[in-house]
Structure formats: C-alpha cells, structure tokens
Amino acid sequence: MTERIAYGEDALQFADLTVPSGAGPFPVVVFIHGGFWRNAFGLDLAEPQAASAVAAGYATWNIEYRRVGDSGGGYPGTLDDVAAAIDRLVSLADDHPLDLGRVAVVGHSAGGHLALWAGQREQLGVGAPGADPAVVPVLVVGQAPVADLGGNIDLGGGAVVAFMGGSPKDVPQAYDDADPARLLPVVVPQLLVQGGNDLIVPPARVEAYVASADSELVELVVVAGADHFDVIDPGHESWTIVLDRLATLWN
Image 1: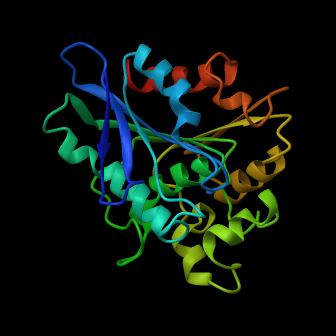
Image 2: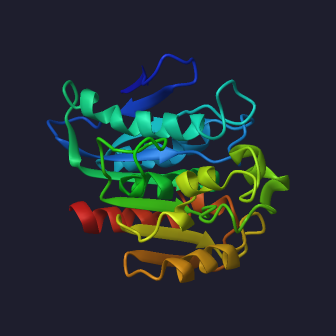
C-alpha cells in the first residue's frame, strides 16, 4: 500500500511511501525524478521503477520537491526539500518497518544530480542547504546524471543557470554548495548508469565527471544503445544493473 506523506508545509513537499508486505525491516530506495529541475515533470516519472523495487522486496520513498517555476523552487529551496525528504525517513521509521542502515538514493537526469548531491551532504559546510544529514545513504545511483553543474551549463536550454540563479561566476558559493563536482572527494559509493545513445546528457559529460572524481567509489556503466529515458524503464537492462547492485549490497 502506498501512502502520500508530507515532509514539509508546502503543498509540493510530499512523497509516496510504499512498504512491502511482511515484518521487515526493509531496505529503503529513495527515488528523485528528473526533468531539468523544472516543474513540467513530477514524481510519476519514477513510479514504474519504484513499483519494480517494491516487487524486489524494498520499501520505496518517491519524493516530490519544489522546482524551477514553483514558489521557492530552484537553489536553495530544491536542495532543502531533497534533504528534508530524505531525513524525514527518521520519523517514518518510528511507525514503519524501515531499515535506515540500508538506504539507497536513485535519481534520473537532474534527479541524478540531486542523488549524487545527497550522498555528499556530509561534505557541506555549516549553514549550507542540506548540511548535517540525519540519514546517510550507503549507495547513490545517478541515471544519466547532470553530475557537474558548472561543466554543463549548456544543457537543457539553460536549465542549470535557471536552477542555480546564475552562472558559476555569478554565484560561486551556490555552486560550491550544490555541485557534486565541487563536493569531492566522494564519500558515499556512486553507481552511474548512462545510455550510450543519450543525446540529452551525453555520455562524455558523465565520463568527464568520473575522471575528475578519480575515485574507486565511483562506478560508471555505459549501456550501449540506450537513450536518456531507457535508463528509467524497469523493463530495460539498465534498470537490472541497478537492481543487481542493490541485491549485492543487501541480499
């Protein structure tokens, strides 16, 4: 059964929690949908993957958040929302059989950026949006992620600059707070699943991030022939890669 639960007071600060039948406690997969941080897209993008994860025996927490075009969306509000949604799992575990020692965060495209950022929250300075996490994932998965904001300001028709409120030159501290490529070294293992035929977030962009991270904690899998949306299709081999990694972690 799926419950829609608020994690804040804004109408867009909610997420869908689904827990498998049984005693648990269950590992948790957090889903963060993409859409270049714009409010034209919502959490329904991640629902097929969430259903697949529940069928595999995991609890899922599919989050909505304020986006560009929403009041309070963009930097820093979007980051505040993602952090608050993930940390809401602490109170949810009081009434639901959730294992907070086994939490993974999965995000696609702009949601992939947010997933990678969520894994690096421990690197944030005092007062930065999302600092001092209450829940630290054991794995973050970026599906065709916008992993380096400053290096990808040309993508999505200016989506990065619209999200951040300016260029890296205009708002350098904001990029220091929000850009996974500036929050190195990697502290939580990252699995990046990329379509080889992705024209929206080209493979070379993700490969450049991997090279700059230069970490054994970062694994990149490029799926030949896959496009930007194949990687969120639960019937595609790229999703099987994610499920197999989760099974290796938890089963």
